[in-house]
Image (tube, rainbow, N blue to C red; front, side, top):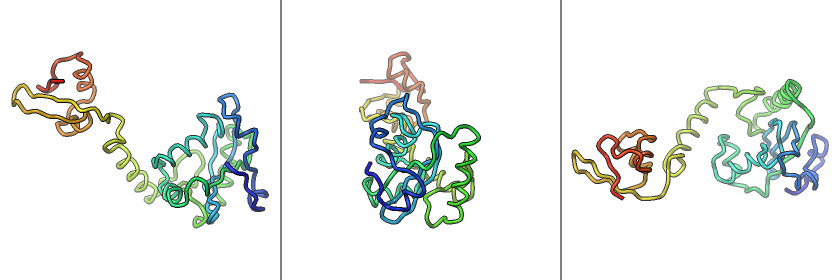
Length: 208
């Protein structure tokens, strides 16, 4: 990430230092408040984490979800898609905050964000939990409805199988996900059929 040169970011927080960018290890934990800022229009997302920068930290998680178009914040995701990663900056506002202190400071920033909703990507303005407004519920529902469909489903794999029903002699050829969905089967039993741990599930057997 490139360092921010704008005076606004200098006065409200600090950008990642070069050594912090290289520190992406599980032992280099930084707990505090951060912002993701759109450098084109100034909109931002504010959040907190006990682990901001490590390999499995909150920033890595945000970046992974955004780059793979899986982020639950639809507004931030659409903006990321439009402007691209290079036009977003990550800023640490405060560090060395823990427990209740971290929650209180995050709430302070969220209270500010709530007063300027047109400038923020945040969906929730309550620290530690999601503010379940009707709009937020609809966005979350839409996200999970789309996330677990087709190739995004955790049971999906691209391998093609052939199954036969011993009663109807019907043949199904396709991937595991479509097979389970079409015939309303139990995924654990289908997995056992694939592993040859059981011969049939609801009269279906594996041919290849």
